[in-house]
Amino acid sequence: MDVMNHRESEREDWWRPRAEAVAQYIVNKFSQSDVIMLQEWWFDDSFTAIFDDATGHLFHRIAERRPSAQRGKMRDDGLCCLVKKDGKLDLIRSDKVLTGPQRISQLVYCKEKVVHGSIGRGVYFANSHLSFPGDIDPVVNDERHANEARIIVEALSRVGSHKSNKDSESLQIICGDFNSNSCGLAASLLESPPYNFVNCASATAQQMLSNVGGPVNIGVTHCNHLGEKVSVDHIFLRLNQGRRSAVPCVSSKMDRCAALAMGYLDTKGSRILHVQSDHIMIEGRQVLSDHRPVTATIEWPRMNTMSNETFQSDLYINTTMPLDPLEPAWGIVQ
Image (cartoon, rainbow, N blue to C red; front, side, top):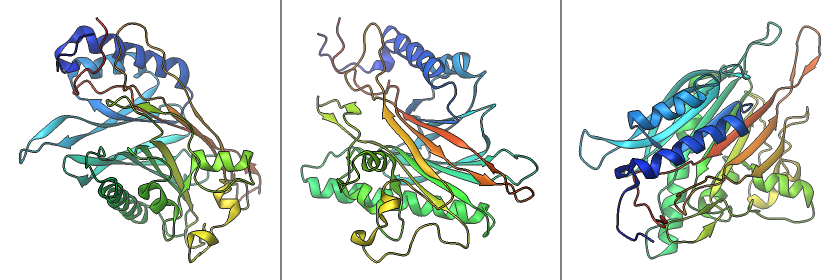
C-alpha cells in the first residue's frame, strides 16, 4: 500500500484507467438518461477528452469551475452536466452560484422539447457539492450545510421565476453530494415549508413501506476518504404549476401531505417512479472514495390542449460522482 500523499492528478497511470472506465460505464449504463450530473469534474484537457470521445455522440456537455482561494483565480475542478442530444430536453444555458468558500452550485436551465406543437416546459437543475463536514462540532457542519442548501434553492428559484412564464409548469431539481444524509439539516430544510422539495429516495421507500414515516436513506452511496460508509448523494425535486400552487400550503412539517411525501407531485400523474443506487466496477487501481451513481426516474405527463390526449414524459435523472483526481489518492494498491 502506497501511503505517500500523492495527488491522483500527478500520476496519469492512476487517473486515466479510471476515467476511461467511468466514461465507458456512463455510455453502457446511462445512454438513455436525459440528464447526468457530475461532481468533482476535472478541467484537464486530457481528462475532458476522454469523456468527450466516449460520450460526445450521446450528450452535450457543459461545466462550471470552482473559484480558487486566490482572488481572481479559478480552480481546476468544478461541476459538469451532460444532457442527452436526442433526449426529452434541450440544453439552454448553465450558470453558477457561490455557496461557500471555493464551493459552487451549477444552475442548469433546460427546456422540454416541443411535442405536437405544444410549448416546452422548463426544467431547472442545481448540480451541487456541499462542503465537507470538517468541523469537530457536528452542529456547525449541519448548520453550514443547511445554509448552503438555502443559497442553492433560492438561487434556483430566482432562475426559474426569471425564465418561466408565471402560468407555465416547470420542474426544479436539486441533486448531488450533500456530504450529509437524509436526516441532516440540509435535507430537512429542502423538504420543509416554504420550499417543499421531495427527496426521491425517501419517496420511493415511502411508496413501498407506506406505514413507515421519516427520512429514508437509499443505502451506502459513498465511502469517503476517512473510510466511512455514508449515504450522502441525493436527488430532490418539486413541481411548480405556475400560479396554481403545486404543493399545499402547510404550516409545519407534520402537516406535510402524505401523497407528496410518497412522491406524488400532482393529481394528473406526475410522480417519482423509481430511484436506485448502482455500483461502478472498475478494474485495476482505484481509490476507496468512488461514489455510486444515484438514479431517479420521473413521470411527468402533460395534456395536449388541442386533443386532451395525455403524453407521457419520463425523465431519467442521474447524479454520479466518478472521481476526484485533485485529491490525495487514498488507498491506492501498488
